[in-house]
Length: 294
Length: 223
Image 1: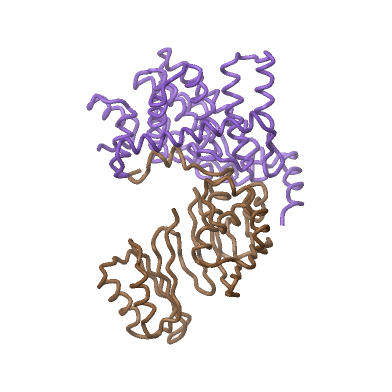
Image 2: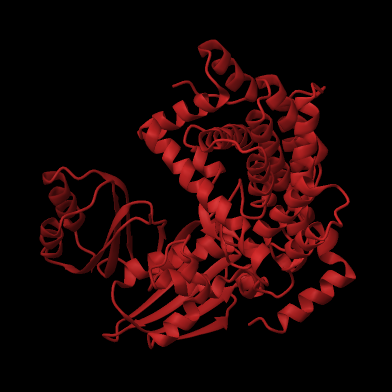
């Protein structure tokens, strides 16, 4: 097994051994877990199944978050699409609705896959799985795309952070969007360089995004930021697959994300002491919820 | 990164919305269940800091009770745990509390089991679903649910710890970490011994038979 600390190393291992990016991540996982390749793939298949299920409830039922603050938006977007009112077309509209659906389920105490975190859990299933369904990819190929995503996630976690408290929302929704852009580009048959470029562009576009949850809850603005994370991942993948390259390489973007995260004040890193969390409306919501608190 | 798994990035599978306020709270409940190791009669839950402010929106109340009922972090039954516990005849109540020098996500549990035995546990959810029990009854400790942990309550006296390690040594059980605490010289003392492997009942009986040991508990690791 060869380990990698950067995306550059990940790609070098793949090219030296003439294997896919997914196989490099799978080989590493086999080594550290002492499981067989079949077991490792099966575990990802089970994870994929949970992801797939997590899209459905908020599209088919009326769900509300525990605070009562959010829920029902995925259905609205899906309904508009079904009525032929989508601005951006059927596929993109489904991506937005499916992403919202997973994030709404998370806020309503449903079962989700943290990817990489619970707060950013809608992006991967919302975009990758919707595209995989549209283009009818085989299960094994989707599983491999998820391993590629986790490989990129591991590098980000190692070189920067995937925690809102440490790096702001760029570290959660930004990382999720970059991982998803990489997975989509891999799934659609992009080159290793295109996969890296897609991740780089996606992360660049969300650099500096703050974590400022209203009343400290994973709801506002988190759920809608997942939809932006998906839109951004698809946009980045579209560019990369067309041959657009990121001027700044992914590893340097990750380092920049870490620097920006360190420079962000504590008030904008999940403490709810700044940004949207201190707007008059957010203060009113917080007060209303507190009357129900202990 | 050497320890990071692909399933740390695409995973864990969990009940939302928050790894610290929901999944972590479930794991605190799971560890408290291990410690109490009996049916519950009455549970008092005291939320501190961010737990107090946001418990409702994060379902921290349902998560703690769900964990105490033995549900894992990915069990959809967590959402209905309050109803389930009430139907089982378990009395439980939530209170606010302000604790000194603790993590913002901290809970204190006062649990009375069906035999009338009281257990008080203070625990914190420290991020990403990781937890630590910082106080068990009157003893400060650092219990994370990562090992098989043997806790003994005994009279402070020379040679007692040596006897415990001698028994563990005979059975080739490696001590990963060990902490010995006492109220004051010659009084109540506690040993917390983290082991890489499970201890068989027979070995546990030998340790319990050491003169001076009042009680002991073996706590299994979480997941």
